[in-house]
Length: 213
Image (tube, rainbow, N blue to C red):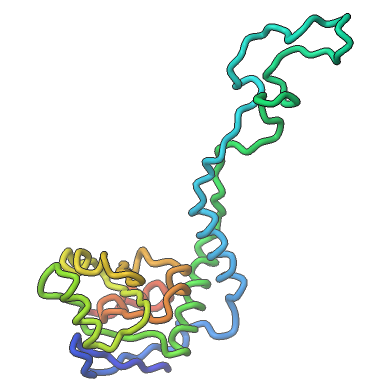
């Protein structure tokens, strides 16, 4: 059983939250984490590199010179890959780099990364994430109140419009819903702040049962 303290937005402890060991993964999942990260980064590639084949290069079908009698090698067209300005023989073309990761591997990777965060003390629980207005200053003051001085990932059950507007201009701070967060984001940030309602959804992703709100 792992116990995490719950804090309010002023940084004061207001309770505890228990995580059963049967929904955490301590002894496996390294390969799943690797596969999930590789698949995510591959999916971020645009795959838009493109070159022209010889049939796509603009030009006529006129021979550069006659077939015989010039002393030079015969040439059929200027679009040939052997000519400067001609087509590219084996150049890149638009493609998808997407890799498939099945649901079981994705869940195992998420469980392992979240477990490692819990063990390392990099998970902090907030009773709720609220700001009085949509100003960056309000979000910065809230972060100072709960003693956040490093890049941080905020996980919520749903994103409030004030929170979204107040946090979007703060570098190295990201607010994401629990259902949308991925393994790469969890690994990227040294501190993860989760609301209590967000933890209910995380327990579901970890394979537990959702508690009543």
